[in-house]
Amino acid sequence: MVQLVSSLIAGVLLAFGVSVVVLFITAHLAAGGKLGTGAVDNAEVVASGLGCFCGSCYLALSYRKRILPLGLATGVLYYLTWTLIGVLGYTDVSLLDGTHSLIAAVAGGGAAGFLCAGVLPKRK
Image (cartoon, rainbow, N blue to C red):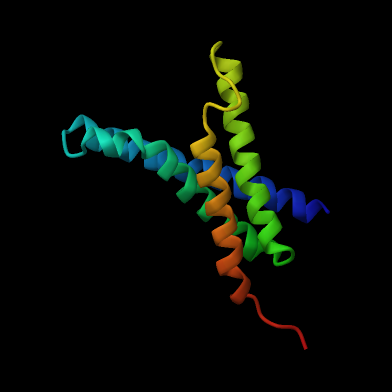
């Protein structure tokens, strides 16, 4: 149980790190004029999906049990943590403001859980 919780927290932290790096790169490219406004508008959704994919891959490779549900849990926990940060930092944030990010996070986590299932060695 301790390994499950620590792997889940590490996966969510990795998802945060990857999504923040993607957002920084997007902001840098937008400031330089190399990205259009359409790409900048969708950067949060892409960062959520990519971050949760990477975090769930780490979780799947470190825990190796119940991979798909844990990938989905990584996406949900990632979204709830970002929403909690938004509610604490701003006054006009609701739970339904980031439904696109929720869908991307859960899809990224689920995709990692689905794809990493074949990587695990089979027991005899």
